[in-house]
Picture (cartoon, rainbow, N blue to C red):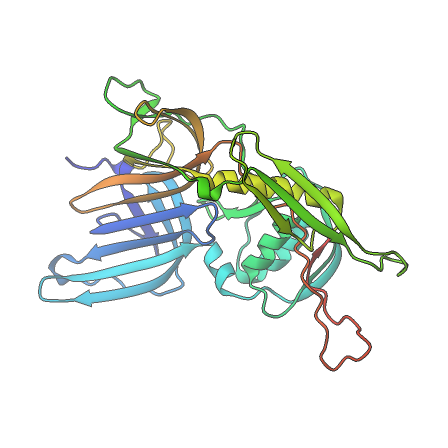
Length: 375
């Protein structure tokens, strides 16, 4: 059966389009920077395509919908007695931020948008959107040599309680998950007639892992001495404990966090670590035919979907954290989904203060560099 045009993966590069692949894979994961893609092109009759240069901007389309915008990183040409093929690999806009150092700068009382644009603009990222209502300002931002642009960006986002990712159209977004977004439809494992907003699952795996769970988290922090007047005393008795009422096995954990220097930060940190524990302990992985959700949109992280499997005793709304679309000549076009509990993942609102670096020749203990983000 011929694939419909709206279901084909098309590569747009140098003003040309190609959609006949021996193999293709396109990944997207909220928790892994730089979404990756790879394509393998078999050459009919030995015809060599126009020169493909690393660093060329590309766009991957699913019919008329953009699924990834990025750059061609690698071109590999293979010739043997049977065939002549090209393998193309690349990443989205986060690739250059992961590879390259952040610009060195120091600023005070800067908004999050100002900090983010200063970090990414020199590396060619022009489309930036702050998807939050926060009026966050950093008291001081100091980027020093050795910081990658992605690390600096992630720290700036986390200091405001947000998270960075790239949309398929190439826009850098700094925000958080939208748990108010409508459910894209229902995935069902099992037979029976399906309605228009339902889609069958080819396979479903549900993993519950007690080893990743804790029943309570206690964060021990401290307040550093000094302060603005240099006379305040440090406190090492900051403590915050958060319990998970959904687990009935006593599995406590204590975390020492030197960056939790207020009761509020310690409490927020404890809630975040407990949510991470619960998030890691429950994973649903499903495979569906095609690359579109029941609502007709291309599958993407951040979608909310209803999953039903009587065999797994599962009937709930889940949150998509990763998806991989794959297929090719003679292969089925499928999408692999990684799903987690809905409304559970929250970005890490954490100040990311690192230890002060002192010159080894500085006898009076003067602080030379204070990297990181201070609130």
